[in-house]
Amino acid sequence: MSSIHRDKHGMHGAEEFEVGQWFQSKEEVVLMVKNYNIRRGVQYKVFESDQLKYHGKCVQFGNGCNWLIRVTIRQRKGYWEVRKYNGPHTCLATELFTDHRQLDYHVICASILSLVNSIAVHQPHAGLPPSINCSKSLRQPLTGNPSTGRPN
Image 1: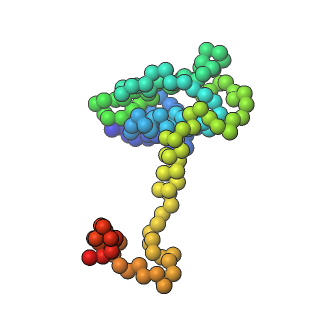
Image 2: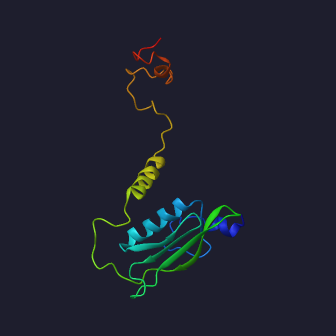
């Protein structure tokens, strides 16, 4: 991959998408588009989505907002690339929601997973009191008798 594509991978704190930006998978594209719209409190609708493309527009498209995104797979290169982007949203969220249409379990799981992955555990036994003997192998419970749960 060329260096220009490496520099444009993912969002990395960027506020807006840009043409030429690329993602490793369609799942990453969908998650980033959902997160973008959730953070702004606006809604979008998916117009086309299959194994080759993902195309979304603001629900206010044509009524004062021209936001749209078209991302397609670059099959020879193996990544998804933003091919067309009209942004940012020019519509305004008319009310603040405590829930959002695109806030689904995929977005919630990805957020929790990134939070868990950010917690570094270098010595898992370091915080345990000395009275707990952690020197035994973690494999020991797996080698016991499965019917009784006791060691052989």
